[in-house]
Image (cartoon, rainbow, N blue to C red; front, side, top):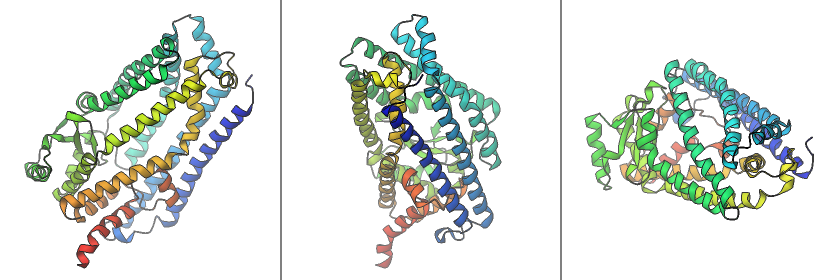
Length: 423
């Protein structure tokens, strides 16, 4: 029988509050879009017709409702697992096998991960083959979808099992200092994954190769030569075999740093637009945004692991969820359940930092190219091609968006050039 105490009350209040806030944000965003979705923003006049605008609104609303449904199901499953007595029952079965501590912990987390994986399959299928297909994005075949699924499952199982196994080993053999050594392992693991991802993991799913368009390549060489950079770090990827969405991103560290352009982006944008996007990604590179994010994550993870070390021996943590005695790997899960809803309320802080990085990269693009017209044009095309929401609710975008809303972003870019034009 679960003991309802102050800790349980705190958990339920924060859990329900975060769930209600998520649904409130979705609701006001949809309502705002319904109210303004028929209006073409002045900045997009001549770029977006009424038919495309209607598709944008429908895609945003349908995706948001589906995400909200998935979130509700996740919340209900989480509550069922935590409050129904399932976890003590699972632990009871695992302990009967008298397996070593590390093996028991891996079985415990493996069982929960398998449940999450199975329950997530229907949502993944519907999103890919219903919503994304309906709006002309999904190009993936069922066969490739299954292959991707299996690859993801195997890679995730291996890597996360390796990391979790190291954590559990340290918890067992270094009871007083495990939190520090676990942090060192986690930090090393993150750096290793950042270094390996572009050259080992990503090629398992896609083909990466230097940009093929010779004219575009020459222009890239000229741009990057100004900064002493090598075009060997710019690749195109065959993402079109899965989706028609367009994108570009910066990844890797050290010698594996690279800028990746979707083939769908290369096929739908002009050379000037692609160069402006490249300049934006170079801005992330030169301003070390990825390293700054990594440093922030390392500090947060160190603090989190130390707090976990301090709390894991607290009997009330286990009694609240029906456990008779402390078991540290169970405590890790319970702490994640307790602090997860609280961390949700800090989402705007991370989003604000990422938006600043995007504005800085936009400014760098202007500095490098001497104009904002091509980047503005590229953003408008990206919005159209990806059916982006041109009317997000201000509170929703403030809370969630890692990029400034498109109209705000384009206005900022135009303002950079305004002084020159006035002169």
